[in-house]
Amino acid sequence: MEVLLVSLLNGLVYGMLLFMLASGLTLIFSMMGVLNFAHGSIYMLGAYFAYESTRWIGFWSALLIAPLLCGAIGAAIEIWGLRRVHHNGHIAELLFTFGLVFIIGRSVQMAWGMLPMPYRVPASLDFPLFTLYGLQFPAYRGFMLLISAGMLGGIWLLLKRTRVGMIIQAALTHPGMTAALGHNVPLVFTIVFAGGCFLAGLAGVIGGNYQSTEPGIADAMGPIVFVVVVFGGLGSLAGCFIASIIMGMVVTFSVVIDASIADLLRPIGIVPRSDDLLGEILTVPVARIGALLPLLMMVLILFFRPRGLLGTRDT
Amino acid sequence: MMLEVSDLHAFYGKSHILQGVNLTVGEGEIVSLLGRNGVGRSTTCKAIMGLVDPIGTVRYRDRNIAGLSANLVARMGIGYVPEDRQIFPTLTVRQNLMLGLKRAGRFGRWNFDDVFRLFPNLAERQNTPAGVLSGGEQQMLTICRTLMGDPDLILIDEPTEGLAPRLVEQVGQLLEEIARRGVSIFLIEQKLTIALQISHRLYVMGHGRIVFHGTPADISGRADIRREWLEV
Image (cartoon, rainbow over all chains, first blue to last red; front, side, top):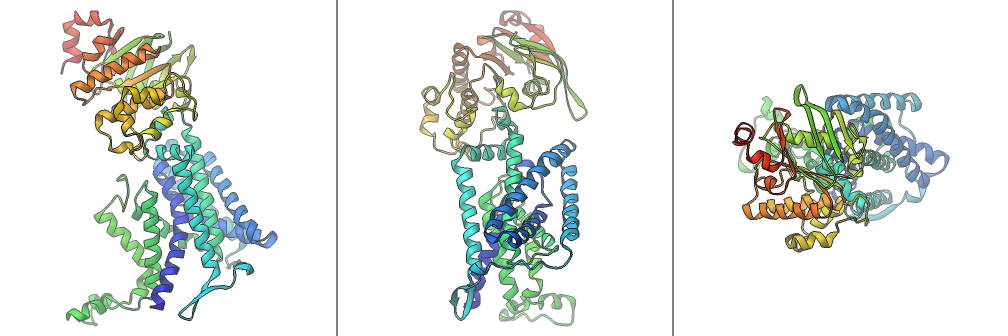
């Protein structure tokens, strides 16, 4: 029971962190058709920037400085990079962001080295928020939930209640028509790209000391965020949100489940032989293949519902 | 001339869609562009609007606008109503109309009351997502959305496509209302019904070129042109 509740909370924290990354990525992807491979790298930059500004100024200002820096980098990437390669089609854009992954990755390694940075939870948030069945729930995770929920409310208000948000929604479905009504769609693209990078940077600030701040985190987060975007469906923030929470739960729960498929089959009388390949696959505990599950789910959804959970179009 | 298109070419990939189109629209004029599907009528509109890369000259009020991006063309006073309607499905009817305004709260010849008086259906459904409207309602919404931006010249691509006869008549009345308010109209049609009634001049297009130009009376006397380029 306590494992269930604690995992539920942890899954929620992780899911919301995923949503902070995936929401930006899905907006960029559905509006501009660009799958930004470098989104995870921006997340990593956010963590490193947060580490540096925490060192020099303090954690609370890092909460603003690091996302702003990431947003500025995003705007620069869009204006001087993506916009130029756009004429050469989506493949060129994909390759461009793919190249960015290596450039950012190497730059981070050159600047900070391969070892994890001592970016820690600030002392003011380093206490147990409450104790559940003898297990402590750290206040910092509560803080992460607060930030990500605030962000969720913020983008909801922006998209639903402001004119810029309406133009963004319009450009999600018909960018050409939106431009033909006199709206500066390239500027909207820049705003969305920079905004997505701002959110990735913010996720990096609160994720960097939750996971660890090292060059590997871009590769650790990148693919799973991509899975969330595909799973949730293009053009739908609601789908993206649901997918993020599901993935957060799947990843968190799979770590603690020690059962295997064979355990499921046993009550109905099927006992796999343990000496052949199939038997071996069936007896692998879920915890050992946890990292595979999200990818497996992506493959399944691509088979049975290619547009994703709540996607509005197929591509 | 308000709009003067000369030697306009456009390509989709390697196919040469527009092969030297010449046409003009005067202030306050209603001009129709007729022709069968696939001869380049929609592409002509998109090239004027900057949604397709144009090669050639497009002069609007003595300024060459060929190659300007669509939002700048729109801000110079040209409105565009696409044939596939392109309403914003997740936004409400009212929000769709609001996005027609180039700046929030700045109304020109048209405001919400005009639209809702002309189309009571849209008034009733102003807070429903535009995606659930019927085809006819969507057509009215898409024209009204463009009107909210107060264009001086409006390009309308096949507004009667797929509409019931009663709605076709309504579109015709709307076009007359638009003209009464001093807006020039460049209308793309396949059928002759509305175009013959309201146009001052007509162009007929075939294979990426203008093949006939004249008044409605001229074309009524030219069965050969109708047979070769218009009748299906």
